[in-house]
Image 1: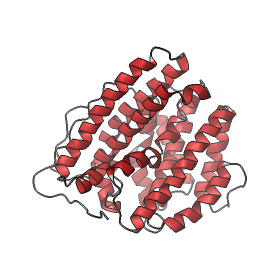
Image 2: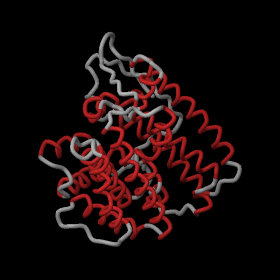
Image 3: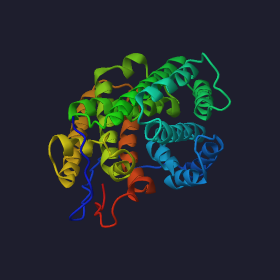
Image 4: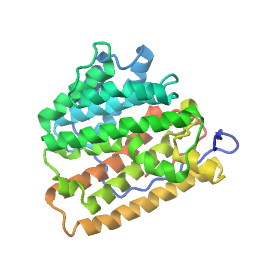
Length: 333
């Protein structure tokens, strides 16, 4: 059973660059939508205390929405921004919280009400802040999306929620998963697919079921999901180390199971990033031979997500401020 933890010590750490050939763009409505969405989040009672609310305000999660969805209309950006805020708040409260996040049984018991709300089978209790916000978001997505698109999003959210039990079970026994298990589960635990399911919804077009499930689209989606998850693990390692021993982080997984130093593990994650970018570009060439316009738009949305996430993370106090002051950063991605 691997249960080791890695500390900051010795020479200053070098954060390796994450080269990304995709365009860097920001939605023109970023600032005002971020402010509106934060007001919505603060009023939802999902965050406990003024300090937490201020931490979320400084995190500017709206910039993640704006960078990953640079071309969507204002109303769509606001909906997407609110969904991202729900995910970050849920992650902090349920997945990384001391009481809930470390007890798989407690987390499992907390999920049925959320699943029933997603299916429209029950209304949340008045005291259930996350359930109330989830129901509101479901109604807003349903107004904008087709029934098939809503079902696609609902399915990805359920997968994300169930995956949190796996993480909680690992925390309960202080287990660091193997690289093989971790890479497979990271695609689900990070909630990235719940956001991918809103790319066409926010863009005002529709990806048909046969397009969503096409092998080329699946492969590109998985590669984009891998890139976002691994890049997040690299850039957020210091933050996660503080409250979860970073056990669900590729840096820790590689350092533990491959007996690497922290610096060498950071470099290996960056190398995996480079290989995934190359694989994405190769697969996109195959897709270009048959892709419809909606598919091309969706793939461009994946590219915006990969690049936008890097840009957001490098500018976010949520992640960067947790690293030692002498950490050395790349000049550009």
